[in-house]
Image (cartoon, rainbow, N blue to C red):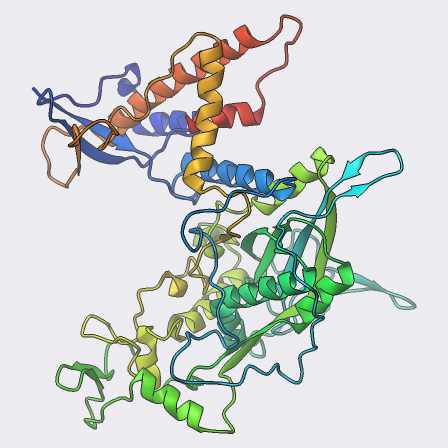
Length: 546
């Protein structure tokens, strides 16, 4: 006997209607279909699992659920008054790596860790082991525990269109192009003169931006005097340069933060890659892999391209060598102090911090090229052209374009076509995580935060005498079983007796409506008779998390 997805009354509606209902009810519109076998009964069923996409353009409900989960994670750790429990293992999944001064792994090569002469020295503060911020007691006896909201940006790469600005004695001055732009002008933040705009440096800064963030956080902790914890989001500005929003637990003097940002830099000690050795034609004339030498070889001359280690040896042997690139923050730094009891301000900051998590970097101007202004589209394309050919890591296949065999190279690498998402149009150099969370922000993983949200619903239902559906009824393993009862297998194209995505969505919508109805009724029963307020967004999102 074969059990598939139960029928729903919504099956008779067209696909676009079912999809709209799925979006409005928080149901995934791109469910991943799996066949689940029950070894005890000998039956099977088809189960749809949420796709988990973080982009609204792919799946609005999953992207919204991810944003709300991140909002909860941010809120829970920002103004803690007790030390969180340590996570098992060396690092949390979102923790960026802390590396040596030049950003490379420690190898047999040594390089001076002396700070650059053009970088200011940082103060040396005795370090306290605490991670929570200091508390201050007012004369009225009330205790305050303030924290910080920081925004850091990269420097300028050339003049861009901007709003009119007022200059004392001269009045209102237009943009450098001579036009008085309005705030809705699509030209804002695009280059005034694309020919002089430094796209290469902009692309390199984007590719190495995460390392600069790592360095800033390390320096901030050293100057803060305690293990400052942070929840940070990398977002694109309108000019497509990445910038950082960070909620930091505790406070550091404003001047110290500015000093740290000014003194923070990241040096890229890589072989020179100023200009590709091979042409822009990625389909012809490129070196090929040679099994005998285990390196790439120039087809025309037969010369073997030097390996990564050899190239670094040559760089280290040159006393006059300079880093291939240096990344720094710009002069614009925004610092806001936020107190825990200012709920409106805290909520606004968290909403602003996570506002654009549902958009990729490449969707800054919109997700449809046909609706993007020509100047914006040209700006995006020019930046992407540089990101495509620059190397993103020592193992990047793009090193072949510069006459170097990448680290750990093999025949599987296609010259000039690195598979890292950093080179994609959607990411424009930022191939890492958009959300960076320090290890002791909450002491919980995202899975544990998700379980907390489901537990809120469970307790509410239990208080009203309603038993929640078992979310782990199809789990592959249980504590009291020697072997799994349920076996999951992904649905393959061409499999028979498989329900359509519309049928799976329709069933999920019906179930979600039933859950939400039960949840609302349970809240009404548990609520005092004189309290008639409606469900909050957190209540609804908690029900969605279930």
